[in-house]
Length: 481
Image (cartoon, rainbow, N blue to C red):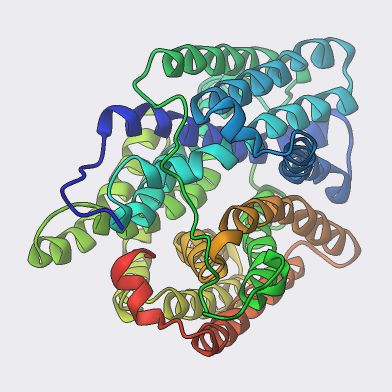
């Protein structure tokens, strides 16, 4: 453990965080592409979820290729090419994916469109493998997970702005928007995105990010003395944590992916008017993560208490500002300020213990989904969007719990967890299928089941870690959020 004299290197952290922004921007923009593709290519709800399948399964395929190459060269690939080059290569792969949108739009080809998204996702998987540990590395180890939460908050700035910009690029201004939209209109936004990827790659090339990060060392000892496990799979916290990441990314993504269809079919919304609500959903993740990131700042306990209330409303303010600039009517959204209070209460109740937080937030997520399923109109829309608030801090909680006590298997464990991001695509597809055979309102039962597993994991993992001599309240004071 390094001491607090090591400061966060903002000059390195800021270029790194731009990558997190793009992940968010693209992931949330997919939610706008889904209804557009659905109309243009006449797809069922299940078929339209292929957008998410291609994007999220690319993470898994990327991780598998990464592991295979590492095994082939008998050395961790990133250690061989360096963290900085890893990020740059990842960005260039993603840029190549955006180029496919051009011929895809001209040929009016859905398979080519989703192939483009798949390649963007492949690039993102390499960026994820590199950037997550790097965010922890560019400052004191004690506040590493909080920096990850902060990077997550920036990621959600991307998810909040993405749907609005892409919607604007496809439909034109909110006032002049027309319903009939051609796939042609998707070309330009994605080519601009590709250019941005290349720019960031160039910026990273000249940034002060270390080319090789030799300081990321792993404990060579197993945590429990005298006990040697041959692989990461032998740790139940990791194996169950992989399922947890799968269902967590699943419920987070599929709740948003299926929201446009719910609002169109059940509430009679038009496609062009849905973007602010998708933006609110992803802004909810930002609201929660900015609250969690408060811990990364070196301020007094009293100031942290105040920031805990200020940060979520600051994030909510960003959402309102962005939508005001896009000339959307904000009057529907003010009531959401009250729902945020529920999230702050859950945050305070968790006392920073990752297992307790996972349990409280999962139960709150179940409550939000059930309210959404048993109500109609705007109440149900706000209930579904509030799922974002309760998903917000789960990634660092699950990550911290799953790789705890893995010792020398930590890197392997981290790669296995990132592989499970494919849950975003698969759970969306399952929900889309259930929506096709029942109705979209009922299909949210899928999310309830996901949260139920997360609550179960939160309860089980505490016992598992205790049996390995790890005290959860100690983790939180040091590393995890």
